[in-house]
Length: 186
Image (cartoon, rainbow, N blue to C red; front, side, top):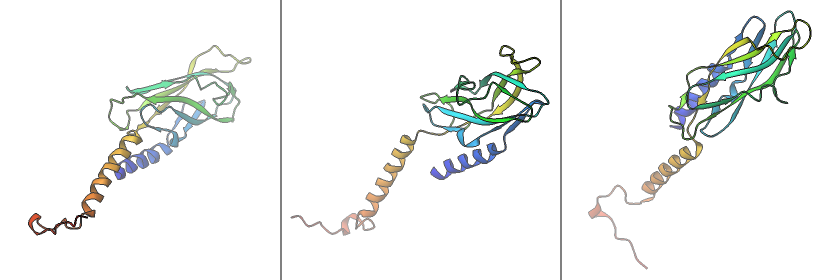
């Protein structure tokens, strides 16, 4: 069970390490190590946004759509740790993009979830900052992985370990019941 979980997580990390999106003006590279969560845990997804256009781009907001059972929140995008209000040509910024939380209890299948989308909205600057325009500047695919709660796995592993140890501690486990030595009582 542990090996399977490790393989799934390693596969997801390798698969997501190259995930990037490009939409003419902006590129986005997600940080793949932040895409794994357990039910009830809020995870912040980070990424690097780069302006590859010829002018300044105003970043005015974002939208995120994930599969059922995952609650997403984009309010962190323009916060203190989020994206800057604008990027000049050639500039990039690594920022908190959005947060998601798997529902408790999580009713979906554990592992890699169906792809979602992350959209950055804003506009190309014409004459100064424009915080009202909400054109889609970038649509990026988003993949997240949901793993079982650690307490559930720990309980299962502990129970199996206790059963295994108790079976091997019995000195006469291979003898038929009639051939076992009676235990001395004090």
